[in-house]
Length: 165
Image 1 (cartoon, rainbow, N blue to C red):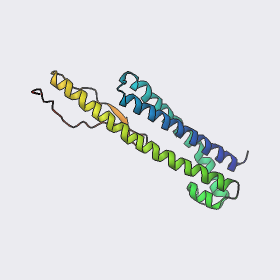
Image 2: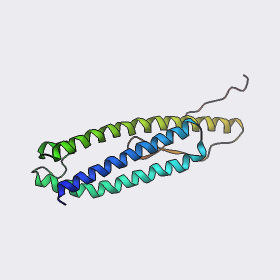
Image 3: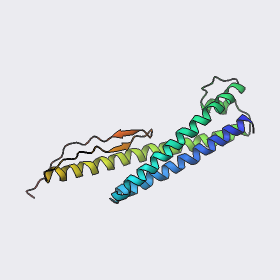
Image 4: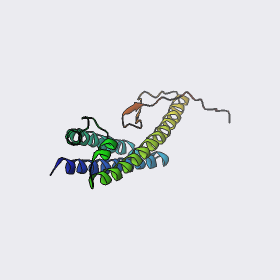
């Protein structure tokens, strides 16, 4: 298999993994929206595993992409757009389609991550308020994911419950 075919295969795998991540983030959102929090650790772990798989696959794709870049007369870190412009058919059209799909999936992931972070933040804030009302405190800081897939601490604004109503 030549390097262009290997790159095509890696790009296809990345698209598949990103689709899996969008699905996992949607499931996470459903769990949060329906307050089925007993499943949240399992769903979040699944998101982490998929992100790890993507990182490993990207580490394998980079050397192949660099070899293709060199063959096409580009710098080692050429973008997929640059590779598309320099490649011949059928690679150019195949990579162009894949790139469009990747951009769309990336946008979906960013939106879902933002929405899930907000749902989680609201849930943590509500829990903290209930615990404060009961005389307790929320000791365990929860993590969520930012649009890049990195783990991020949830910042909980202070809210008070009105017990007079």
